[in-house]
Image (cartoon, rainbow, N blue to C red; front, side, top):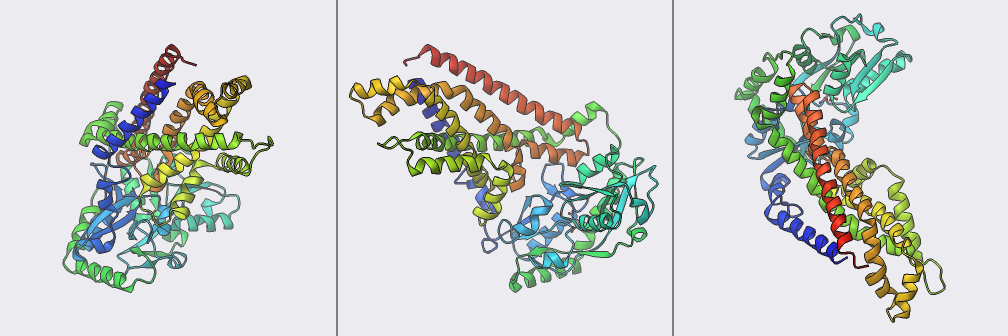
Length: 499
Ligand code: GLN
């Protein structure tokens, strides 16, 4: 048990030291800058970097594209430094004013969105169109009857797709978080058509030149849309400042320059062999560094969440098994039971979204929110692991402790709990391993963990195979290493067994 305590103490100290000198966790030295308010000279901008050429992941792993350069130019005119946050398109409107100051994402002005946010002057006229496979027979609206169509969740394409399904009930609609995934499914013949904005559709058409083609929106009676910057409601000062800056960026020719660079540019990509895919996914522009950074984010969240989970889990386990003098369960035992039931009875991803959008609505610190959520979640599982560890210790030990003059609490602390922890060690380590893998969902709170990095790189290179297999391999190696460490630890604990 001494060994366990010592290892736990060493782990905690290492984390704190790494924290202070390394990644900068709760203090968030580096990240703090990114979240300062407009008053402090930084405009935080939400986007969804899967909408080329308006926003996509550039060579260096950061969002780039027309909208990004445009908002940077607008920010410069306002005397503000722009910080970009890449998040799900569907979360953008809800994040304006809480998680980010404004959002730019080829976002169409719609009456529904206007209920939640205000918009700047329009900066681009757009329209929806349909993208299909080169050999497809789909040519007009009626051809969409009975086929499988796709759209990105929460987009205006999604609204049109809903209308199509209403008109042709036998048509099936699939929604995706990323257009890129919809395009891959179109190529794999899992869907027959995607409804999306014309310029990104043309970009995908150019990238997969002999595979995909676009059909203009006129064939489907789609209306013209307007892209604008979304901002918090009722902030006329900000709205005026942004509108004036847009006018300046248009007047001084910057707008046209960016337009030529991104929208009128010719993008094409030739299909790559495996080695070329490997080079572009890992070596080009030092992309392997992005995977490592992603892995560090995953490990950072998992380690701190595990510490919270272990501490709180232990408390919950003791609360749950507690009995009063009459041998009955006290109220806090039921509270612990209820907590464990609620956490285990709801999906982790929902807990994360509830923490991000409701409980910690005003926090812009994704790492903090994710760590707390994972910690609170893990505590429920740890509590059950430790509780069964305690129940496995024979009652006689408790009685023996008490008859030796220990109090109930002392017996629990010095005799029962140490053995229970040691017995639970393998399960606790498994819990940590699951935690590390579960961090794959933190993309929902705009963090770039290993899984999200793989996704970003696959949308930057338009090759899903290598980044996804690469990320899986990295997880596998790290987890294999961890399980070997656990085995070693278990052996050492058995050697020093004092119980
Ligand atoms: N213009 C579309 C919308 O506003 C799609 C935008 C996007 O996917 N980034 O819904």
